[in-house]
View 1 (cartoon, rainbow, N blue to C red):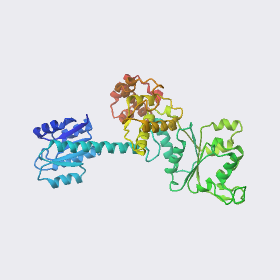
View 2: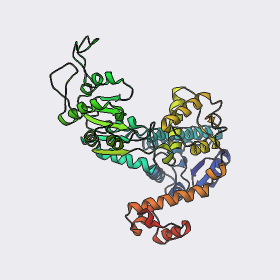
View 3: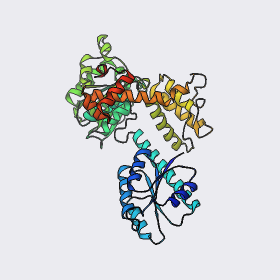
View 4: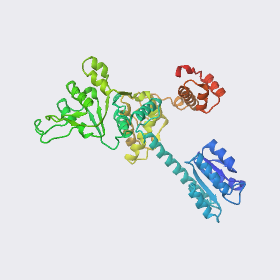
Length: 451
């Protein structure tokens, strides 16, 4: 049951409210100190707060101060204030100071239940909206909270404002265009075009004119002068996907553009200056291709001023669940269906799958599951995993095991960030040095391996 904090110094009111709100796990407090202690301990989404608290029961000053402190510690908490019939202005003042709603005595259990239920629904809706924003990566455009993707996100944040040429390396379906777009959106060029071109999807005889444009009459069918993708990206960012598939003879012309920042259209003689940021991507080993004379070595070093390796989905810890949740919320909204989550079996199946198609495969799985799901919860059958994996739900959702994994990971990361300083490690974790040493013994951790 959801935690509901009731703050009132009248035992009779406390008892009546607790009886009326039996659908919730009610926690009681009688003054500001006990209310704040309960808030820290139980983290309730909704609080019922009587404004007439001791030592100033006759006025609302103590209640309003408690309201202010609750919202400063837990700003997303829905606080419903309780007032007397003659305190309408006080209730309005409380609303102005951040209270979600107010209720005037005498108590009516049906009305109180409706107000509280609505507050919980609003708290859950706002939490879901915040999750969508966080998962969607509003600032960076990069979804995921694994250590590997946090490293990628930090690199992009640091280089976005520069003019450095970026090479994204990763398997097919890992989101290379999404990352290229993140570089563009966080750069000073974000008001200008982001132009993407897939070098593998355009026939060799057309790729040159697609990139550099052509003059009228340059070849059969060239009825008018046309700008290429490079010119179209003027002032913005040009994304060259699958650059390893660019024809060898065209690589020299691209290299000249990167060095001189000028282009010549097919059939033209005039040099046209172009100011663009270039981001490239490939799933191939360009250095190995250079040794085989399939890719120009000088072009490789020109496009790889900064190389970002994108990990496959199977190496991104719990990001598969984060991404799955994001896609579920997105597609449920797109297709106007009431799918809200995953069954335990579905979560276990998502984590067990190896995802050879990476994020693209996951996205397609979730899309079809959202459309085909018969209820509000997606099952492993909806995902098409009914015969593919054996699910060990007890292992996947054993709280002790998950807590131990989380604590071990946090200790390793804090130790690494503290550069091996044990005092700073303990400080980052919010624990004492003796507690830290106790956890090291408990989990048999050898921190030197993670420095």
